[in-house]
Image 1 (cartoon, rainbow, N blue to C red):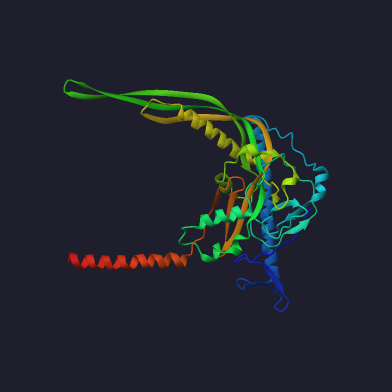
Image 2 (tube, helix red, strand yellow):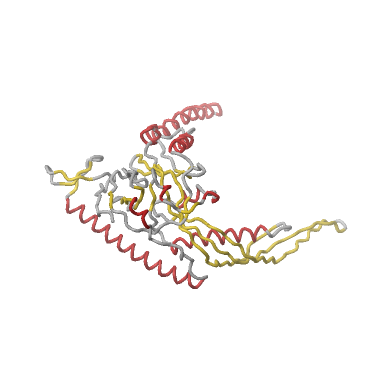
Length: 379
């Protein structure tokens, strides 16, 4: 396992702290703040206590999820999982980020110089030990150059984007990462109740009469689902991973370490049971949408009630390709993700407030003059 290293960060700006013998304090090169050693040790001890409490809460929630799983539709079939990598383990190495906790693996020829998730330049090499082996992988189809080109296209037309953010030295921090995913297969079953109306108008003597008929409409059905993806990495934002879908599953291949050279692979840290709620929500949502769309021929359609359940099936552990860019701007982290197969890219951009207010002033000044002239003319 990787060595345990604590990377002390400045409480003010999150920059790295280092000990200065002359002052006997931990000092930050970025904001100039300094701290007593005991002060920082106490701060990190508190963080460790909170982390331990969060871990205990997560374990309790995991136990609750397992009970709910047994009650709702049985446990997911994970019988194909194994942590035996065989001879392939000899050509692997492990990295750990002491800043965000990411655990990464790669082939022995790939060097990891920084963490793709938080940008921390310190990643600690360690001896590879048997982690759960994926059974499926979609290989990278697009190159680093493709990722840089798509990112530059994403920058275009962004008037308030800071110039330094889009400079070439930032673009070079793009890293190809195989992100862990659980792929859920099973069946959703449910029903929906709608109150619908249908109206028709006719003349009766001197009157125009509209009659409205009310109907109770019920729909029920089942829907199989195959390999619904849920990312199993807590470091990667779920909305980013949802947004760069879909992947073309025709490129799914049995996992092999031959696809790793030049790329990093993230170790999953969110269990199957923890991810099942997201998978269930997506599948039941698709079923309810299909039931709703089957109600046709009415002028109005109001949902009155619904229920659904999931019949658990097979779960696959897959590695899917993502190009990741992590950078900082004004002490804030910005993470971009691009589908390494299709090129779909998402991410939030920082705003250069100086440019924003300059443009605002340029627009507001003539409008203010125009308003003053209109007031004078109306007197």
